[in-house]
Image (cartoon, rainbow, N blue to C red; front, top):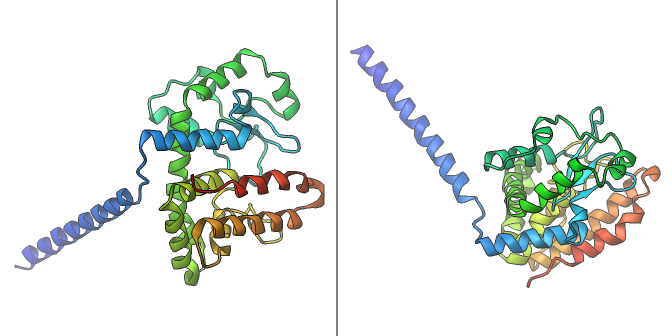
Length: 268
């Protein structure tokens, strides 16, 4: 009799566990951002425009003063071997995403463990080489996949941000996120900003203990219409980043462009 009871308890526990896993899966599915192809296309084009003016040459960039390549419509970061920078490296994640979507990568790119150009000088010198042309061609042909990748990065950012936020602020952070997500202009602002400045959960993405990611902006938002509040908070967070940055980085040279970018977060 005890054995039957024990077996029943085990089966009951397994059923409960399966039900709980199913519930979590259902919740995760419910949190996916549903977009039509035309909506996704519009987001991708705006993201590409913001990063590099929608230019083909802008798909393979290495900005002055940085120690990494910026690739694709979202200028996804790729570090050379031996460089352990403070910012989240996203280009290898994009390559994995493309392979999962059935995109065939050039052999050299599929095998690469780091950016094959060690610094900006060599990257720029290689602008017209076969590998660089092949890389630009791949990125130009996968704008739709890159857009979906950017959106999935946003989807995955909310659980991380809520885990990183102080318990008393989590409800407000999620409320602000959902309010923005509910409008096309707000959704683009979320997608663009998380690719532009990260989700704010990396401890290395701080100056003087203060970050500049999406979480920091959501925390800084004031009551009122979501998108204007987001723009104002983003300006404040980016200005604070420049004030806190090490003088040698000279980040003030980028501030005008950053502020123009967030000022463009509008409906329509």
